[in-house]
Amino acid sequence: MLPRASRLRRSMIATVGALLVFAPTPARAHGIGSEAADKSVLEFIPIGMEHMLLGWDHVLFVAGVLLVASQVRVAAKMISLFALGHSTTLIVATLAGWRINPEAVDIVIALSVVVVAVVAILGRPQHPGWFAAMVFGFGLVHGLGLATRFQDLGIPEAGQLWRVIAFNIGIEIGQLIVIFAVLAIALIVAAIVGRDREPAAMKLAAAALIVGGSVATSMVAYQMFTEPDDIVAAGYDITSDVCAVADRTEPLPADGDHASKSFFEPTEEAPLGDFGHSVGDGYIAVLYPTTLQGPDLQDLRAFITDADGALAGPASQVGEKVVAITADQQLTCDELDIEALTQFKKEWFASM
Image (cartoon, rainbow, N blue to C red):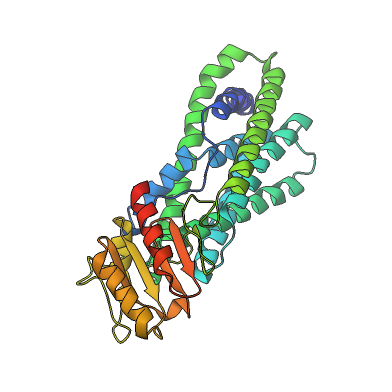
């Protein structure tokens, strides 16, 4: 069977590639659930496997690379380069705190599916060095986007490295599952397609990947440029000259429990681990500058005291701003605006 490995693989990819194009949903391929922040190190292995097996970007890109490769050895090299690039930037960017727009990365990865499919139609490169470099480059970009998602989870720095490594192990296990499943299907597909129709089947699979990747790129781009990025666009029925709401970017550790009280004074140390835990449970956490005083401090204290499901405490990391954080949204104010906070809280709980 070894002499037929190339034919079996091509036949299998021709079928699997065509089917996968119509199965996945292109939105937010890099998404990681916020509940993952509370998981142990070992629990990040199945999270990585799930990301691989359910993520359209990874599966289709791997399928496209296998379609281009004509030998098992070449395919293994290409997939290893993609994994190396992905792992390198995921770990380095997470630990260094580098951030990049994850939606933009989704667009690049969707385009990568189109690129490898075009290469497959044109035929295997005579000098595969440039293709290997391209695969490695796409891996680097993919890791940058996922690192940004990781940082949004608010995982304590002490636990980030091992969780990222465990996640990568899960990714690699998931890739092996995909490849083995594909090879198993190849035995059936090769018998159905036959040697004479194999080139046509490969072209059809590559064309399907081009169509699917193009549609996915368009949908992700549309989603990226139409998502609201301020209070009015997001449906918040308020007018504020000092506040704006956007996707959450302020990390909180999630290694605490429920806070002992809802309001912490400027002279106290806010238990940010407890705040992160509560945000994961649906609460709103308000971080205010340590210099807040006078009527503003009284108004914020009264707001938190009267509001169920809200916490507040001083945090030097926000500078002179007031920041209200939910599981996926963030209200940032240059100065305290109780009306904006009230409406933000109202809309958040209404959305839940």
